[in-house]
Amino acid sequence: MTENCILTEKKDSVGLITVNRPKVRNALNNQAWEELHAAFLSLEKDAAVRVVIVTGAGDKAFVAGADLNMLKERSSVETFCGAIPGFARDIANLRKPTIAMINGFALGGGLELAMACDIRIASDDAQFGQTEANVGILPGYGGTQRLARLIGLGRAKELVFTGRIISAPEAEKIGLVNRVVPKAELWAETMKMAESIAAKSPLITRAAKLVMNSGAESDLPGALDLELFAQSFAFSTQDHLEGINAFLEKREARFTGK
Image 1 (cartoon, one colour):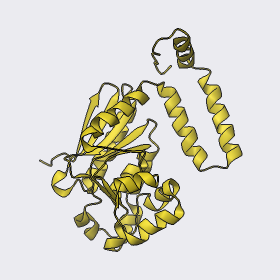
Image 2 (cartoon, rainbow, N blue to C red):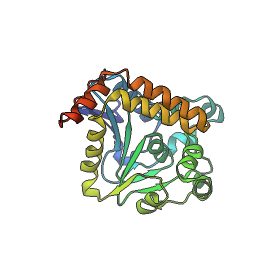
Image 3 (cartoon, rainbow, N blue to C red):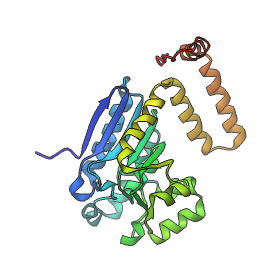
């Protein structure tokens, strides 16, 4: 029986996905990508889940890239027609906020997975690299595009062209990750952020993600129009009244997603 490459669990309103291939530093083969994609989509459909965290099993790696044995056998036609780039796009466009909890190496496809998430929190010993050039290929799951949007075109070209691996402090300095924390505190800090997001209206976080993702690819006037429509929608929700009343009554808001 084939062992599951991906583990999924729920902690209250937070969904946790773990890449479970620690013997190969959680490298992603076809099966792992398919299971990963299915796990994200399953949690997206789960009304009880408001935030999704993805991490890697063990303490050595988040995801140390694609499985090279898989890449060695892949043809150009399989690459062009394959589904994995679509999986990465689906993760990036998930309707719920996503957090990459990076507990070690995030290289190649692993870094691309992390960049497909909305927020990246890393342990202080994590390492990052778009390392495909070292094995004669280039990033194919969004790395040439998302990296440039996060850290700027010049820095992105340097990392893609050289395949250089950088430390967590450097990744934080150039804006590749949101936050670096001591390894022992990674789980607690990531859950703290996830719970803070989960406590907000799921309608509003979903609308905000849609507007921000779409606006980043649009001109400013069009993006501002989209923002206005989303804000108008917010004023039609029960959650907006709950939020205002809770503030005026000096109590915690109880958002229901209505």
